[in-house]
Length: 483
Image (tube, rainbow, N blue to C red; front, side, top):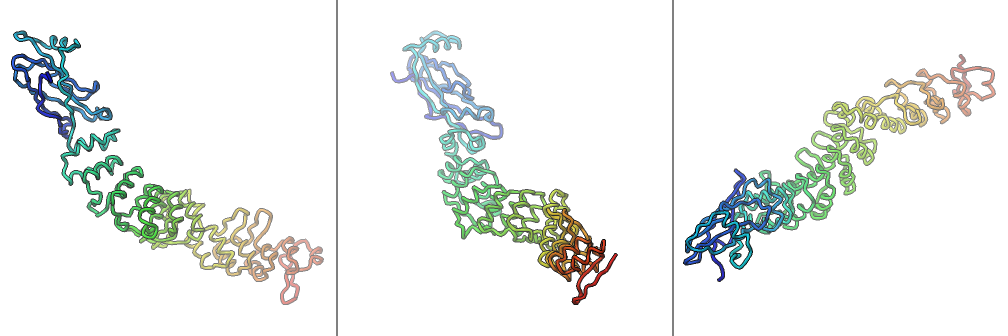
C-alpha cells in the first residue's frame, strides 16, 4: 500500500498581504480507502514554525475529502525563522476500525505509538509568494534567502520586479539585487529625475557590492545627470569613487564636474567635512580653488559649516592665497565663517599670514584686501612676535610700510628680542624705509643707531651721547637729532 490519502496540491502557496501582515492557504486531502476511515495528523516540519494548521488531528471517512487551512500571522515577529530550512507540512495517517468513534485524545495517542500502523503519506512544501513577502525578505536581510526570494517573485511581472529592484537597492541588499536582475528586473530603470539606480545606491549608504552588482549588470551611468561622484563625496565614500573612476574611466569621470549649483565633488566634500574625499579628488587632479555659482570656493563651503578638518586640508592644498578669494558678495571664507558663528575658525582663516606675505613682497593691493576685506589684524604677530610692519621694513618695502601705518599699524612694536621695524630697516640697510618710519614717529634707540653699520653715525661718536632721536647720513652729511 503506497498511501492512505492524496493531497490535491504538490505545494501550498500563500500570498502574503502587507495590509494585515498575515496570510493563509487551503488544501484538500482525499481518503483513498474504500471501506475504512483514515486518521490524519498534520504537523509542520520546523518545530519552531510560525505556521499554524486549523485541524491538526482529524478523521476522513472512506473515499471522502477534508479541507485544511494553514496560516501565518505576524510575519515581522518571525522573520528570522525563514533563515532555516524551507517549511513544509508532514501528513501522517493511520487506518481506523469501522464502527468506532475517535476523539482528539484517541487520535493523539494513536500517533504517539510508533509502528507499522502509522504511514508517512506525504510532505507538502509550503511557500509564501507575492511582492510584499519579497519586500519583507529584502528589508530584513534574511540570511540564505535566495531560494525564498526566487519563489516569492515567481508570479511578479517585470514592472513589479523593477520596483522591487529599486527597493532592494535602497535597502542595500546586494544578494536580492542580483536575484531580481537575474529574474528580469530592469537595472537601467530611471527615477522621475532621470537618474539611474547607482546614485540611489550611494545615497542609501550601501556596501560597495550593491554598486558592483549594478555596474556588472550593464547599468549605464550618465555622469551629468547621475552626479555619482558628488553622491560619493557627500557619503564620504572614497572606495566608491575609486570604483567609479575605474568603471567610467579617468577621462570620462570628470572630477571637476558640476551640479545645478555649480559645485564640484570637492565643494560637496568640503561642505560635509570629508577630508579623505578632498584629498582623493585633489590627487585625481581636481581643482580645490574652483568657484560655484555664488562665487564660493570649497574653502567657503567648509567655512560656512564650521568644518575644521576640511578647512585645514584645503589650506594645505591651496596655500594661504585661498583666504583672499571673495564670493559674488565680496565675502571671504573668514567672513562666511564669522557670519555663521564659527569663531573657532578665526585663527585659521584670518588673513594675518596672507598680510605678512603681501607685506614682504610689496603687494600693496593684496595688503589692502587683507585689511579691508579679510579682516586681518594690522598689528597681528607671527610666531616670532613680528608684525607685518617688521617684515615690510626688513625687506625694504616703503609702500608696504606706508599702507600698514595708514591702516593703523603701531610704528614701534617690539618683538621678543627687542627688535622694532626701524631696527629691521637699519640692519638691512634700507635708508628710505628708515627715513619714512622716523617721519611717521618711529623713535631710534641707541641700539638701533649702533646697529646701523655705517648707515648712521660711527660708533665712536655715540659714546658722548646717552640717546639720539635719530642720526643718519644725508648726501654724505652726518645729521644728528639729539634728545
